[in-house]
Length: 91
Image 1: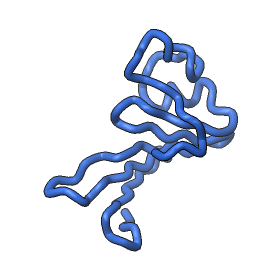
Image 2: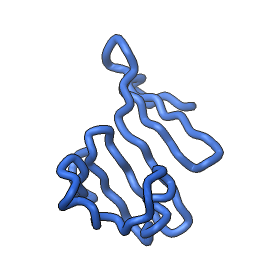
Image 3: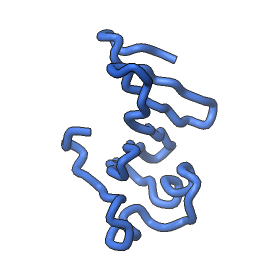
Protein backbone atom coordinates (compact mmCIF):
# COMPACT_ATOMS: atom_id res chain seq x y z
CA UNK A 1 0.00 0.00 0.00
CA UNK A 2 1.13 3.54 -0.74
CA UNK A 3 -0.42 6.99 -0.43
CA UNK A 4 -0.05 9.69 -3.06
CA UNK A 5 2.05 12.70 -2.00
CA UNK A 6 -1.14 14.73 -1.51
CA UNK A 7 -2.74 11.96 0.57
CA UNK A 8 -5.96 11.88 -1.44
CA UNK A 9 -5.21 8.57 -3.24
CA UNK A 10 -4.21 5.16 -1.94
CA UNK A 11 -2.81 2.33 -4.08
CA UNK A 12 -3.10 -1.25 -2.86
CA UNK A 13 -1.53 -4.21 -4.67
CA UNK A 14 -1.49 -7.98 -4.52
CA UNK A 15 0.72 -10.80 -5.74
CA UNK A 16 -1.46 -11.15 -8.85
CA UNK A 17 -0.16 -7.89 -10.37
CA UNK A 18 -3.42 -6.02 -9.84
CA UNK A 19 -3.29 -2.55 -8.29
CA UNK A 20 -6.43 -0.91 -6.92
CA UNK A 21 -6.44 2.87 -6.78
CA UNK A 22 -8.68 4.38 -4.06
CA UNK A 23 -10.00 7.94 -3.87
CA UNK A 24 -9.87 9.15 -0.25
CA UNK A 25 -11.40 12.61 -0.72
CA UNK A 26 -14.84 11.67 0.64
CA UNK A 27 -15.96 10.21 3.95
CA UNK A 28 -15.69 6.66 2.58
CA UNK A 29 -12.89 5.39 0.27
CA UNK A 30 -14.12 4.86 -3.30
CA UNK A 31 -12.38 2.64 -5.83
CA UNK A 32 -11.19 4.88 -8.65
CA UNK A 33 -9.43 2.40 -10.93
CA UNK A 34 -8.01 -1.08 -11.34
CA UNK A 35 -4.53 -1.12 -12.86
CA UNK A 36 -3.24 -4.27 -14.53
CA UNK A 37 0.44 -4.82 -15.26
CA UNK A 38 1.08 -7.69 -17.64
CA UNK A 39 4.25 -8.94 -19.35
CA UNK A 40 3.33 -7.50 -22.76
CA UNK A 41 1.29 -4.45 -21.76
CA UNK A 42 -0.87 -2.71 -19.23
CA UNK A 43 -4.48 -1.68 -18.76
CA UNK A 44 -6.52 0.61 -16.51
CA UNK A 45 -10.22 0.00 -15.81
CA UNK A 46 -12.62 2.35 -14.03
CA UNK A 47 -15.72 1.22 -12.11
CA UNK A 48 -17.95 3.08 -14.60
CA UNK A 49 -16.80 0.85 -17.51
CA UNK A 50 -14.14 3.03 -19.13
CA UNK A 51 -10.80 1.42 -19.86
CA UNK A 52 -7.53 2.17 -21.58
CA UNK A 53 -4.75 -0.18 -22.54
CA UNK A 54 -1.33 -0.18 -24.09
CA UNK A 55 0.77 -2.98 -25.56
CA UNK A 56 -0.24 -6.53 -26.36
CA UNK A 57 -2.92 -7.35 -23.80
CA UNK A 58 -5.29 -9.49 -25.90
CA UNK A 59 -6.49 -12.52 -23.98
CA UNK A 60 -4.62 -11.54 -20.82
CA UNK A 61 -6.82 -8.48 -20.30
CA UNK A 62 -10.08 -10.39 -20.04
CA UNK A 63 -8.49 -13.24 -18.10
CA UNK A 64 -7.20 -10.90 -15.41
CA UNK A 65 -10.56 -9.21 -14.82
CA UNK A 66 -12.33 -12.60 -14.65
CA UNK A 67 -14.47 -12.40 -17.76
CA UNK A 68 -14.85 -14.83 -20.63
CA UNK A 69 -12.11 -14.57 -23.19
CA UNK A 70 -12.85 -11.98 -25.84
CA UNK A 71 -10.51 -9.59 -27.57
CA UNK A 72 -10.35 -6.13 -25.97
CA UNK A 73 -12.98 -3.91 -27.56
CA UNK A 74 -14.88 -6.81 -29.15
CA UNK A 75 -17.84 -6.48 -26.79
CA UNK A 76 -17.92 -2.68 -26.61
CA UNK A 77 -20.73 -2.30 -29.20
CA UNK A 78 -22.92 -4.69 -27.18
CA UNK A 79 -22.16 -3.39 -23.68
CA UNK A 80 -22.82 0.35 -23.69
CA UNK A 81 -21.39 0.68 -20.18
CA UNK A 82 -17.99 -0.61 -21.33
CA UNK A 83 -15.92 1.63 -23.57
CA UNK A 84 -12.30 2.16 -24.45
CA UNK A 85 -10.88 5.64 -24.11
CA UNK A 86 -7.71 7.13 -25.56
CA UNK A 87 -4.45 6.69 -23.65
CA UNK A 88 -4.12 10.45 -23.20
CA UNK A 89 -7.73 10.91 -22.02
CA UNK A 90 -8.31 11.94 -18.41
CA UNK A 91 -9.16 8.93 -16.28
